[in-house]
Length: 358
Image (cartoon, rainbow, N blue to C red):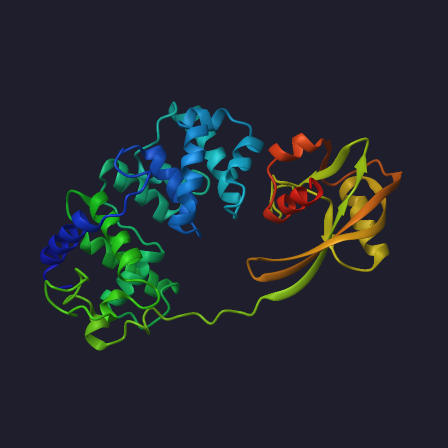
């Protein structure tokens, strides 16, 4: 880019007026930045705000997060999805406490070895909290950089992705990189949006009067390609599938199972659930999961929901135990109604708890 100095000045002038007010900004605390960046992965800022405030109120320091039970941490994460992020955050907090005295490390290589932290997250935390001169590349800035350089290929492809990282690095000032990176993210979020970027509005496209501080620098705008860049992937049609969850009660308690590591919803509790198949197949799977032989009963309800690339029809029915099998693949517990309110669950299980609670 020509005249990077002018671009930086215009961007920071714009940011001084338009910066988003976010709970994790301004304190210079790497813990707050880290938690927010993990939450923001695959999740909108608007959604994260409420979760972040509740999470930090419960776990105000790395030490308090490391000392907490995973069930308590997962319960506060419930509804954010991508639950592996939460368990990795918890694991990383324990490592920081045990190996680094509870102080977030400042070395880039050390930070990237922590669970759940890749190049972007490490660079974001270190630049924002410690003003390290490190580039960032996430959804908003990837789209912004692609348009600034008129990138015609898929930004996710290695060659293109490497080029965008290099471009991001070339933009960084020697000091104030944290503020500069946040300005870039806000520009991508507020102006250089995925659909209908504001440069396509009635604002003057080029010059200081433009709504966009990148006006005059943006190659996509000069070519009229803002809607075509970045290259959009063709989304695969969601696959349809059916599942069955079972309500089993005994002496005012309900049978729940906890998903093990390595499977969807790891660490969360749920009603015994399996693919909706022939009755004998379902019975065998439920027996292996819970350690009990279960006879399926009447239907209670049917829910439809989406998980990543699947559209799931969930059948919820009653069941009774007809026998016991010693080994169970999943951890089980008989939970009271009050306990079910405090245990971490996936969103559909929580809906079913509300249903049976009246």
